Length: 493
Image 1 (cartoon, rainbow, N blue to C red):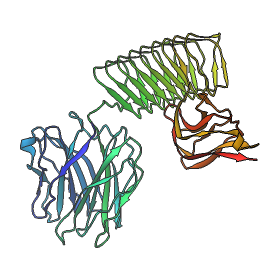
Image 2: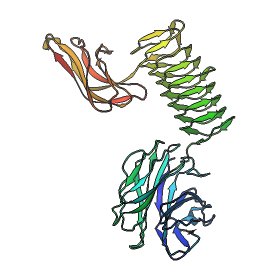
Image 3: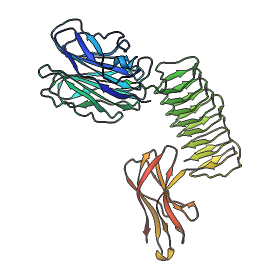
Image 4: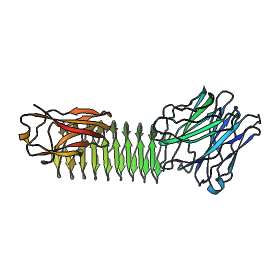
């Protein structure tokens, strides 16, 4: 479940006592996360209340000063009773009545984790204490996990209108833009958007304010309920009865036993034995050592090196893409997909189907034995032993455009070429001419590109056969893909 914005309450202001009564939004339900942002026109420390009115005790997670005239404080709490919490008052205090403004707003968020601190799993918040300017600047925030990123800005002027924050991942949406009464000089802005876990980069937005003023920008993440994240080194055995997601994790050592799904993204190092009863997805893996036993499906993509000291056993599908080196014995009782593989050594035994795409070198130590249909495409060299009780397939193809019937009497003596105007959407885009009549690819017609901008590509000379129909087809390899804008045959006398 993704984290989403529910609502923000009205702006609370006070300059004459030590208590600021911030009002929670209406429509709250149990396990909503509340975040209160407080702008102080001084550096006094803000105190949040304990558990009350259907809301847990508050935890401060951001405190930052900007000169002696500005302070941003953020605190979070979890709703325990939506009926009591809705519209309730949150008494925020400062130690001294100095007749200086402090103001605050409470926002509510749906779908965050239901136990523990929802802000820590996503990583340490970043803050920018900015000099007097029209724009509010936010320092880059690099989430440890895919999360919902929230931007909170405060500004020491009241005549403001917050502009949009440009950029993607996340794409920020303005959630509130609140100002104090004219002459009291205080504004609080809020934005949020979903992040894949990539660094946000520095962001900013205008204020269209009456005057430039000092301001603070803060970025932080809220962790969603789906998955369990690990931020520290784990040594020893871990047992999970549900799903587990590990993202951008650098060290993980020891044994893991899981009876649910396990997702591992951008993991640098993983050692020890792993036993899974669910599915495993490994992306951008650089090093993996130890024995793996899987009773579910396994997909590995963008793997540079996988070194195993024991054999691998799978009872479901296994996908391995863009791997440069794989050593050891592999035993599979279901489908296996290997894409863009440069070197594979060792014995392979498959009881299901095997798909090899963009295969350059497969080195084996004995002869090849197949009991099913074998189609091998773009294979430069294959040596060694392969035993299959299934089907060996090649690339997936999607045909585009109308068929063209070639009648040689209409053309005389010409040299023909395939010309395609296309681009890659992911990885490498490939296209070729297909003989629909004979159900065969036309030799030498293939073109490819990794450019995400449109490029015009032309094949080498090809041979067309009288009375045959032809169509262009876009080839699909694993996650790779592309788009064709136009294609045509070029005839050159």
